[in-house]
Image (cartoon, rainbow, N blue to C red; front, side, top):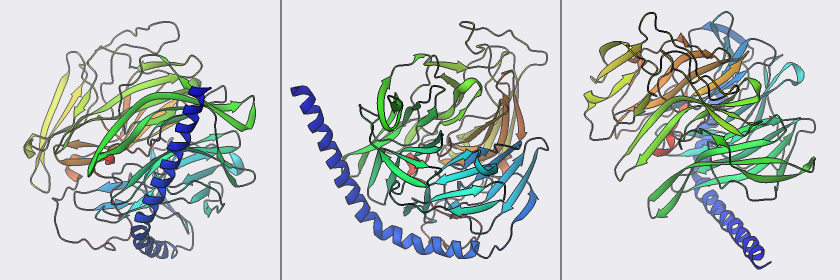
Length: 522
């Protein structure tokens, strides 16, 4: 009784502290959000000039990260919305809508009247009702210099059959945030976590909300049991048994004035209705077996065949006094909820070492930054190397490792249900974080994201696919030409916040968080 009482008292104390912090953050951020509201309103005025739906065949979308890539429930199409891009001086936010036709391998830009404002690190969920609906909640907008932030708390639905946007206004929903996660569960949307950041303060969340797709009403859930600590950018997926799994994520806390400490979470929890009741939920700590991913942030998630959750990429940062050093990943993992087990996804073919990208340190010379566009190396590889000079004079070495002609290998497996464990991709997505994933007809699609080379952030626009049933090799659908990657040196001059009509905004996070808060995953 004594221990239980102490735990309950401690829990109430933590809730009070969180409430005070949220009030403090809210007060300090209100002024800067009011400043940004005028800029957002200006862009919405520009968007309001659209009076009809215009579908235009187009080249692949420009580089971006923290967008959403969703699967059309009835057509062989992928839907890309939002995202951000940083060119070294200015961050651009998007609210463009692109559709990728899988069978035709063709992109279409769809301009729809009155779309949601520009944003990144939002969540998008597709449900089959009414010919298909794409629900979008929250996300982030920022000033072009990346110093002021606005976190949305709006809810939108794109009616896919009619190609119309609708803002759904309902009280009692989550506060403004980005980096949260949202899934469709029966006829509800379940939302967890995220963060809110102002110039001087930030707060991470671990609250849970449900939106009823029949009544269009929000309700805040109060699960029993010990749940996850506040975090953003976690894995959130629905199990075949009707539960919801939360894994990993990122958070930070202030250890002293102007000093923050980041945490890469690697714990797992199950959220499920208690005794089959949808109005009563319970948290349970999980201890999965198998080979789970190394702790990281900025990873992306999608649902794979056989109700498995697919986990891709991310970054593991090592915080230093003056800079961040870390590794970017392009590895694949699968979580089987039925067996509560992790598997490392490896492709058929010759064995090779796992590919990682080292985040450059600040003291690294400019010419020393490298951009590897291929996947992991193989035995007896053919290495293609070329150098390009970017607009700012930086020499970037592009290295692509190709498999040797005629190379082949036999799959190996732990047991009859394990994934093939022989070899790695011979080509495909390079190590990256904050990428966009989608799975359609058992094929994984990987689009965009970012990595860092020295002091430069490289934002990607390539598109790759992988047959998850065969697990044989990546196929590159859209290549990325590094020569087109704009990078401008930092300057103290003020940028005109209304300079570009199509894509404006601010940095998703501080330098550390820009690699952590995944929006994708989505």
